[in-house]
Image (cartoon, rainbow, N blue to C red):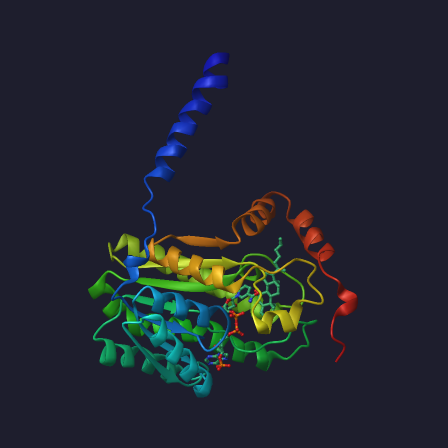
Length: 293
Ligand SMILES: NC(=O)C1=CN([C@@H]2O[C@H](COP(=O)(O)OP(=O)(O)OC[C@H]3O[C@@H](n4cnc5c(N)ncnc54)[C@H](OP(=O)(O)O)[C@@H]3O)[C@@H](O)[C@H]2O)C=CC1
Ligand SMILES: CC(C)CCC[C@@H](C)[C@H]1CC[C@H]2[C@@H]3C(=O)C=C4C[C@@H](O)CC[C@]4(C)[C@H]3CC[C@]12C
């Protein structure tokens, strides 16, 4: 019995783990060749980098954000990098009708849809919650409800193609970080909605995957400006982050963690020692440097 417990059971565990992981398909850039992809929030940051990766892989990209001039520049670069086609639609995701309009445009100009990458976020503050309920409501519209509206509009086309939905979230959508209360609420909402929807699609045997992306601190201009003085952790590169998101979507993974160890390990602590994790997070902040306004 002792031998069984000490050797046999761990051995079977190792064999099973090996089979499980080695059965996973490898990512190849060709997977995206000719695919029709929408990327939201692609005028800057991680979204912009995803558009460039997709262009290099030969995808048809349709990007969106509010600032037309920036979108035009991203489109020009995408065409230089080898996109099968590159187009944009500009407008605000605060407006539900706009979210639906983007999907209709994709149907019109691309003739269908293979991947919907939901990435945009509205501007927020990185500071103590100021009690502004209106701001929470506005952010929920932009960061959460528009994701739901786009998904509802896109599902019929994604069912046709056996496509994928990629939802860009954050560690702040799994754990409570200080100074991100309104933002964090919108990211937790995404986990609830899309994890539930994923279960329903599986029960109904609908071949549309949902990938939730749990990101740590990434070196985009907006994140650096807001948090680099306060957060004592070094940020990860946006180019690599963008590629990992696309890989996760193409491989139809349930969730991706970027960077892996820096996000996975705190989440392992979360369920067993939540107070310890809360403490470690507070320790990794330099509150003195918080903007006084
Ligand atoms: N950077 C980080 O440290 C982390 C980022 N993430 C997540 O990664 C994703 C990308 O973040 P990041 O690249 O840093 O963000 P950026 O601030 O660089 O980009 C945000 C994008 O959203 C667009 N946007 C803003 N407001 C609206 C609006 N009202 N309607 C439509 N589009 C809008 C912006 O363009 P425009 O202003 O022209 O509309 C821009 O294209 C987000 O989902 C974020 O939550 C998660 C964890 C950490
Ligand atoms: C537990 C630790 C090992 C991991 C720590 C990661 C921390 C530092 C990471 C995880 C999520 C990150 C925030 C985020 O998701 C998005 C934004 C929006 C941007 O406009 C301003 C910066 C902000 C608030 C990031 C700040 C840094 C956060 C809290």
